[in-house]
Amino acid sequence: MLKLTGNSLTIEQAKNIIYDFEKVEVPENVWDQVDASRKAVDDIVANQKVVYGITTGFGKFSDVFINQNDVDELQINLIRSHACGMGEPFPELVSRAMVLLRANALLKGFSGIRRDVVELLIDLLNLRIHPIVPQQGSLGASGDLAPLSHIALVLVGEGEVHFQNERMKTVEAFKIAGLNPITLKAKEGLALINGTQAMTAMGLVNYIEASNLAFQADFISALTLEGLQGIIDAFDEDIHTARGYKEQIEVAARMREIVEGSQLITSQGELRVQDAYSLRCIPQVHGASLQVLAYVREKLEIEMNAATDNPLIFDGGNKVLSGGNFHGQPIAFAMDFLKIGMAELANISERRIERMVNPQLNDLPPFLSPSPGLQSGAMIMQYAAASLVSENKTLAHPASVDSIPSSANQEDHVSMGTIGSRHAYQVITNVRRVLAIEFICAMQAVEYRGVEKMSPLTRTIYEEGRKVIPSIVKDRVFSIDIENMSEWLKDLDLENFLNEKKRMSDVQVMS
Image 1: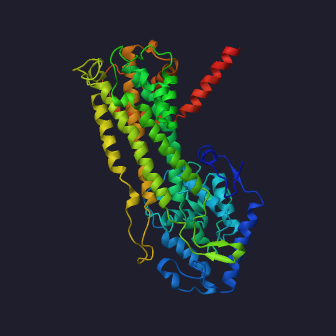
Image 2 (image 1 turned 180 degrees about the vertical axis):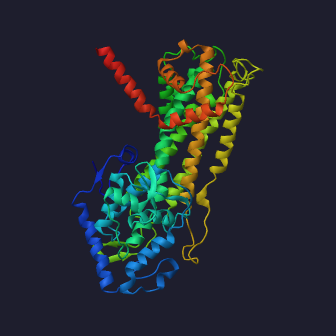
Image 3 (image 1 turned 45 degrees about the vertical axis):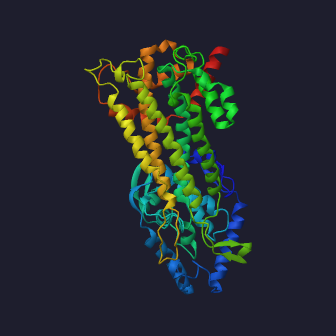
């Protein structure tokens, strides 16, 4: 049971909640600040003070005063009118992450929301009731208004959810789960939707998947290194410490560890003096992508624990300030950077694929074909990888450089961070497919060289991969292989898998 406080949520904790369904609870002392900020809102309404979003309209309507008797209706109108999401829903994991991050932000106690509302968000998490949230419709400033409105709709008993592996009306899910919808009070609708939780939730899932994929890329490229009898000297520690990037040093060390004991790896001058860049520069390129991931992680962990709505309530209600913490620029930049960092993993992977299939660049059978000419082998797999790489170049165009004014020019600069985060997910999906193709080709290449000559670690990965994709002994529909390998990589936590393998091996040695 994880304790949610609004201030200390880490990516590892969020991963346990989102992926492994760890339950959450709120320590009693955390509610004190929540209750204090709510009392401030009630006092504002009772005294008919003019405060944005509580006793006024929204956006360009901020100058319209709302009568005390209408402040509750103002909030439900806000949610219904702003629920303009379009297109396919976000993945269910992302919807779950949105609920988690919105609850965490509200627990900071700057939003003026009632305890009942946050408790219902916690119930959604613990009971695995996940709102259906369309992906399109957010500008990424004024918060993720449209996506988060679909979260808020669920709290009032409207909209749709995923529950018990089915898509259903919220009211049906609440009836099964024994939950009651809430009636929004002053400021609560605004507090629920004025935030960056859609782009941040998508960004969180992106980061988790991208980090796993970057780790897998080192192992897949190590198989390729063996298949092409690559030169180990390029990974010597002295080369990488001479430059000084810790991520580059880390990748080089990992590559040396992965291929240790391999009889397929060569030394400089043994077959050739130097390898092509796509082999020789793996630490430099993969390491640079790890630097991007480190930047993205830092920004996500700040935003996951940030107060991002407006206005914010301080000092027991003595200060109620309108600002712009809902502006998604930091996450927009992070997601655009992530797109570039991940796209490069696919760029260099595709070049390694080309080196394995092109008979002018190696001494393997042309296109790794079991019968060159009669069988095309991996010829079109390289085409497919090249197509995905090219598509990524388009998706990697920064969303954050765009802005369109909204709300009659009151909201005249926006981040487009949610578009950036969605595109990052598409890039990551494409990268995984390119790496899947490299893995398929690398397994075929090492078979020609001799599986028995592989290193212990690459042999382990090869054997696991062969459980998913059989050897190419005849042309077949490789689209199925690519998708099966991609799905396997998506589900594979390689670091944990290898640690478990090592633990089991150590246990056998001891016994």
